[in-house]
Structure formats: C-alpha cells, structure tokens
Image 1 (spheres, helix red, strand yellow):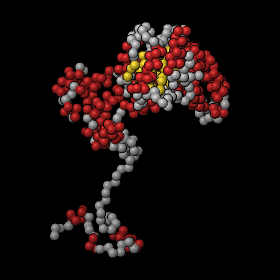
Image 2 (cartoon, helix red, strand yellow; image 1 turned 60 degrees about the vertical axis):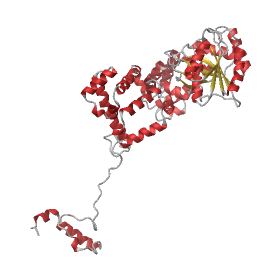
Image 3 (cartoon, rainbow, N blue to C red; image 1 turned 120 degrees about the vertical axis):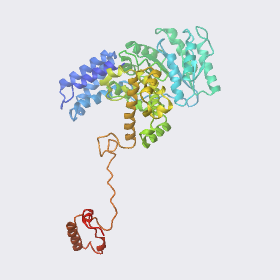
Image 4 (cartoon, rainbow, N blue to C red; image 1 turned 90 degrees about the horizontal axis):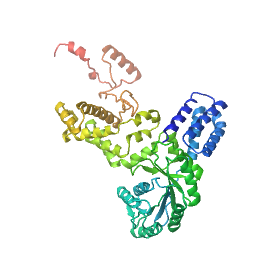
Length: 507
C-alpha cells in the first residue's frame, strides 16, 4: 500500500546525500517533495500541513545545522514525525478487571468486520485468552453463517442463537452473550455488529443501543484502508455519533494509496490498534506506529520478523538442529532441510518476509516477481525421494534422478541443481555452526578461520631446544654457561643430528 509513497520519499532523501550543509533552498525543496508525496498518497490536507510545518521547523533548527550528516538528520526527523501522526506509542487492548472483557466491532458494511472478528479471536487465543465471537449482525444475508465458519477456522467459539437474515434482536443477543460467557468461562467477548452502506440514523442508533446494553471495554472502529479520504470522514461521524476507543485497519495489503492509515489517527484522535494485511486469518497483528514508519521509509521491520519467527519456530527444534550442525555437515539431511523450509512457509509469504528486511525496498520489483511456488516445487522434489536418499543424497545417481523428477513433475536438471545447492548450503551452515564462519576471512570468529590457529605441539625434551648445527649448538651452550643456564647439563645428552649420524659407520 505504501510502495509509491516509499519510492517518492526515497528519491527525495537521495538528493540530500553528500551535502555537508543544508541551505534554506534545500530544506524548502525537500519539504515540497514530501508534501507532494503525501498528497499523492491521499493523506488528509490538515494532516499534511501540520506534518510539513513540524518538519520545516525542526529542519531549520540546531539539530540539523550542527549535525555531522544533515541528510540523515532529516530522515530521522521525518521518521519521528511519521511515528507521531500514526499515533505515537503502541496502544494495547484494555482488559476488564473482572472477566469477560467486551470488545465491540463497528463500521461500514464491506469493511471486513466479520472476517476481522475471526482474526481477532485467533490472535486473542494465541495470546492465551479464551474468546467468544457473538453474531449481532442479523441484517446482512448469511452474516451469522459467515461468522460461524470464520470462528471454526480460527478455532474459537461462537454465540449465535438467532439465524439472522433479518430475524432476531441484536441488542438481546449481545446481552445474552455476557451471561453465556460467564457460565462457560470465556474471558473475552467479541461482538460483531451490523454495518450499512453509508452513515445513517438507523445504524448509529443500533450501534449505540448495543453499546449501552453491554458497556464494552473497547469499541473498535473497523476501517477499510482502501477507501481513502472517505474513511476519515466516516470515522469522524461515527466518533461523534456513537464513539469508539480505537481503530482497526483492514485490507492494508491492497494497492490503494494508504492515506487513511496516515490520516485517521491524527484527525480522530484515536489510535490505530490493529491492522489486517491479508486474507488469511493469521494476517493480523497489533499496529506499531514506529514499525510502520520504518517500513514506509524503507528501513524494514526486523522486530515483527523476529516475533513471527519466535511464534513459528520451536525452541526445542532449533536447539536440535544446532546440535546436528555442530556435529558435522553429514548430520544435516534433506529431511531436516524440508522441515526448516516448511517452518519458514508457516511464517507467511516469502515476499512479505523479505519486504520486512532493511534495504529491500530497492529490490521491490524482484521481490514482487518472486515465484512462491518454487518452494512447493522444492518440497515436492524432496518428498519424491526415498528415506535413504534424503538421509544420504550422495547415492542419488542418474537413474534415481530420473525417477525423482518424474515423481515430482520437474526436469532432471532441477533435481540435480537442488542436490548440488543442498551440499553447498550444508557445508556453509555446518561451518558457521562450528564457529568457522565464512571461508576466506581468517582470524575473525564467525567470519572464517575459527579464530586463532592452533600451534603445533612441541616435543617435550630435557632443557631448552638445541640447534641441529653442532658448531652453532656449541656456541649456544657456551653462551648459556656464561649466563649460568647450562649448569647441571649432562654430556650424555649430546646427540648428533640425523644427517651426521647417517654418515658414521655402523657399530
């Protein structure tokens, strides 16, 4: 969503590189480019004006004029101001002191509330809670059935006593859900309310009635991030009519310009709490303003990447793999490689994971053109092998390659290439696990050479080491005697070098 904005900002900052001092003209040109980039991204005009004014004031201050690298200081200022308009600090969900905690979802029809209810339920379950989804959207056709299906996919419970499709009282369903949650010991109740095609009195009144009936701890307004400026006006009207505590952005993976995300927190005064960035139920997480600002500026999002890895990878499996690699390259098999590859796939799209890494903005086109099916093809090749071939790929000869290629539906060259790449990767991984690091960099732990080289053990002998040259050795002994070091030396210890002994006649 923010690709265009990121590209424009990157081009703007590139013009500042190499300048030891920024003039007024440089600052004016930079802020003008940033203003155009934000307006093209459909950011609300009042937000753009306040943002540019703040950047200009700080850029003309001492923090830039006295900086060793003014261009980096400008980037730092823009990053901090982006964090500020996105809401500042991360806003956490408030939980009731006495369960159940009631979370009410509201918004326009088509914003994705029902699907988001399932995503929120799955997220709460992963956080250690026992959520209950409540079907209070009784107007939209099949809304109750949709929530039941989504709840089943998310592995959470659903409360749907009414069939919906215009039948039933949503306020009574919301009230009854609280007593049901207390009886069944659900600690969080997520109420999915009805939406409309536009802002109308009926929608506002029904939402206000449900709010008054259940007294929610959090009212979350679900906004479609793709509708632009209309999202901000809708949020303002809903804030004044019903009120809400936080914002949830849905469809953040779309190709719209993203102005709603950059405007809504500043205009409404309510922070963005969650963001949905995909169709799958696990494409959902808490919204972190600092991480989103970092992504927009092309700095990546390493913290989110680490959190996803911690949720996906088992600590026990990681330790088991590390111990295997430390023993030697032959311990790491294609079976282990397949297991690791499947773990990475569980983290989500490979292109999304690469996009979170710093500096990958310059390779966006290559990342977007990445064929995700290549991972599936590699898995198919490995699964077409016998257990013996996975344990020892060296036994894979020409006839075996033909059989594996037929079984996985690929060319023979693809099988051969995979095995060759596996051997190279295994060798490198084993060397790094043992502390050897990358070859060609001796003396640096983790970068090759394995640290200091071990010196050859010296042979133990009596006294100090002596030269093989008899004349030099005699001179050394005389010098040692003068220093008092040769006292107590036994003449019987004298021994000719091997070269001289070979020239003597046999005894």
